[in-house]
Image (tube, rainbow over all chains, first blue to last red; front, side):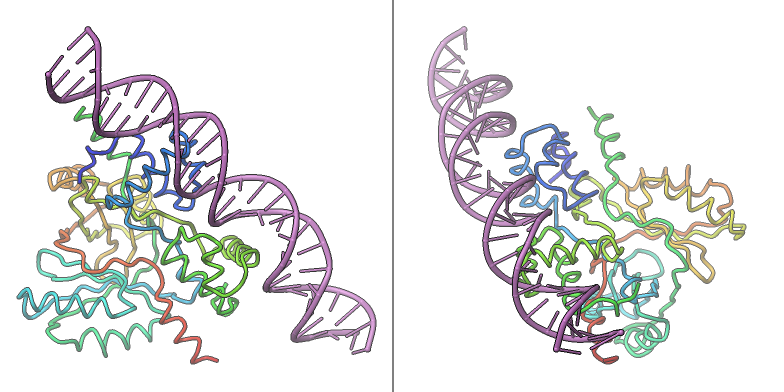
Length: 166
Length: 166
DNA sequence: CGCGTATGCGAAATAATATTGCGCCTGCTG
DNA sequence: CAGCAGGCGCAATATTATTTCGCATACGCG
């Protein structure tokens, strides 16, 4: 389950599909320098091995009326494992919460949330999040603007790293 | 440029492609209840109108040796627009920084970073981020575990909203 | 060395999908 | 109620995906 199991062609496939997930297999094969059938086999293998977890269209939230994005820092009263996972379950069921990460340090969780407008976020915040069981403190920050948003892996860093090892 | 320009079929297309960006057009057409050609036309239109910004394979960072994910809260000395965008340019050029959001409140920016291991993140932190021009303070939090990670738009919320308006 | 064996490639054939062209229906609008 | 615009589906064609096969290379082992 490590990058070392992959050859340069596999890594290039991952990089290309990360950049354009709808690329046709023939185009992909052309770019990585092999013919279509083995290319498709490699893609399937990468999918099955879990290197590729899925494919998603990147939908513009703002166009759809989700004008507001907020980060929420959440502290809990109890950090017992059962309480942590109870909170995580809550997050999974809140559609406005898109990401939930458990952190070290003072804050227990950071949530990335979206909402149509401020008032609907406010009501989520007060009626759901702050008043949820075991939640001790919530600090929120509105996203003013998004300067960079490139989910995924920096393949240039990866290649650099591997070339040093070799 | 609003959700109201879209009919229910368009929104369902967006939802389906957000869930599975590699779905074939015939499968998509079947799901949304129209035939393939108009379905494809709608997808193209949605792409050109910017509702769909792109397609990406979701690559598993951990499998590729990026074990560490960190949120960094950055405060700057000057919040003049030129200084803000200078910092954003820096972030865009740092491959370990995957997201950079400008916030309201005390902290100016939040960065989502990845790294192969703690020590390489530490060297990035000390040699690049903390020592960058105009950076006043950096507080970092390691991600212990990721409970939810569903980038995109909650279409169930959207539909609920639209049904109330109608 | 020399022989299986495994792995991965590519060519060719076939199946599925994407894409184009076109005529039909529907709902306005004058 | 004719004419027009928009959107659909059908049918034909072009691309692409997928399977099947045979060949080459590399490796382990007698």
